[in-house]
Image (cartoon, rainbow, N blue to C red; front, top):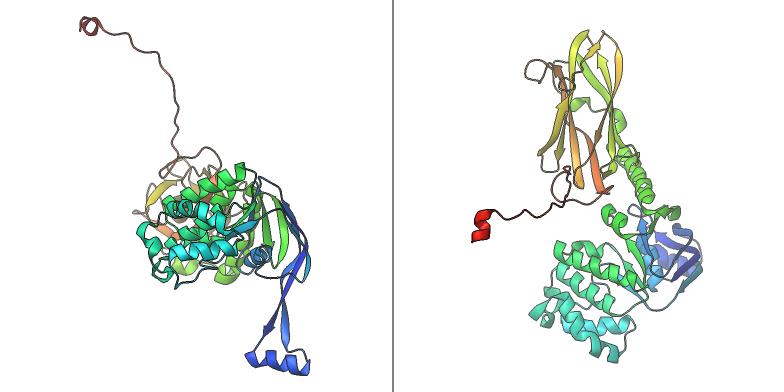
Length: 408
């Protein structure tokens, strides 16, 4: 069990290294205070997985370092029942000049394992890491994925009661990540407490019972993992708008004859209320059309493409049996809604305004990748491939053998 009450941590930021010495000698303050964590409180019960979300600088890594004793808090209480281990920055506690085998002993002792425990579990650690003969090589010759394999194997075999997982897990290959996730689930079922810090929103939804969202060192949400992911997505969406200046418009990337144009556009899930949704969620595409000339029989079309630029789905109002008519100077708001039964990943939406069935006759306005959205996690049952297709399973009675088959 993990019980955190009123945790605070502040760092001193010096503009120049010499200011640290001047402050120590003169007593004059020459630093700025950075509040990395502000009055953090939460609990992780036995057998519970708590996710921690937050953009870079929100305080996630500082929190993990405080829990593992790498840093000391300024105030607050940290109560942990039993041994705590985990993965922080990749390679923490390792000596690159020692072999993998030697690092098992050194790192295991740092985690609180006894020499007897190490002797009993050394072979299990080696086998789980799947490093083979590389276990006898210096760690400096390891790839990041090999280092992660060894670090995870040592940490999970230390038999902790509380386990911390940071982004270090993301450097492994897909097979070993699945192996780690399986072991984490087994650890949870045995009553272990897990703190899971990740930007993999799908993993947070699938693995965590609940999640925290950190922003500027404070907990802004603590609750259901799906809702936490949505809250995190809204924070990231605001950051993206600030950094990319999306308020300024996108007309520089459009082409066409210009009689009518899309002036504003947005995409959001009906449940997530953000551009990051779950597979199977309804997706709303809101557009504002402005006519510079009177135009009748306008067709509005969309094309959804994946991150490789492959066409996933396309349709237009002509195919739906609907057309738009705009008078000169008029403005029309339009909403298209589709059920995004597609695989997790990042997607773009191309928007087109043209006449009749396709844009080859008269293209008024066209913008490739005008909108972006991401699918993270599944709303319904899992599936493999690009999209979900209706599928049913029916058991049928066995067929009676034919006369010819009976004679045989």
